[in-house]
Image (tube, rainbow over all chains, first blue to last red; front, side):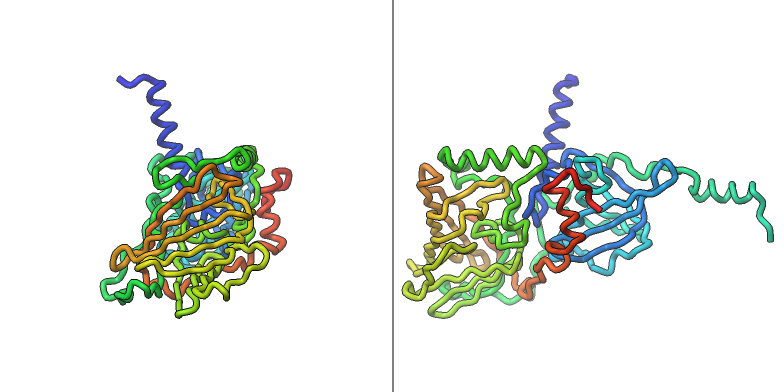
Length: 127
Length: 272
């Protein structure tokens, strides 16, 4: 049976492999994001910008205290997203969405998008 | 109709007004990793036009479909032969990156990324040519690389993002010599560097009917102990000929985007 140490090493390697997968638009450092961690975030779209060099999502997420926090998410680059099947008309304010993202290292509500699940169930990849 | 306090409470609880019914932020499932490695585009339509059979006619639209390399290696699979000056720059950039205060490269300011990134990332480019000049127009940042086939016509001014390039044919291979490339362009995402005295030699040829081989040799005695070479293959993609917009329209330069980018350069300021 694999030892706990072996298992930990294997997990670390897998996470590293996932973490170093570069976005096609890797033109800036991703030091701001914790690429070893992926979060599932559920919320409501406040705004969506289809803009170069990156699309941006703002998503309102309920907090445990009964309030809201706004997550600011870098969401791929328009040309690459379009070639992956995205359209600027896919996302609207008020849409209920689920995000997979690499979170900001400093703990601020935000991150770099891996994928988004739309209200109709479609999944759009940003990486 | 009147709804009592108990009714309001019941509705509130059912609709999740009071607290979070289920966690809105949680660790993502293990199988939710990036899906883009290796990067791939939709297949080329079967009825797409073919490139010219003339090996000296490179015109059309091409793209690198290989995975971008964070830290490039030579064709022999070895690390770049850094001299101490280059090693110091790369280590400095890596250290700042690890600290969460990365050095901003030209590309992250929406300036042309330089001759290596032009081809390394997965954005298409269009080649147009006549007997005097061959021009590469890149989707990313709309960078333009002009190769003058008449050496006397090549501008020799100050350094630029793409440098000054002259070309000639050796058989079916286009050989391009470029100098005068700005020293602040990065050779890879990890921050490999070059001096303003670096010479870039591209050898470009049609390796098959629908692929373009680009072999680049960098000679830079100030930064590298020996010349080194990398080779990349570009695929024929006439379906991408329109090139998308890639100008930083609402991003760099606007107040909101400047605030966003503080997350990269100033941890004391939070993203909006």
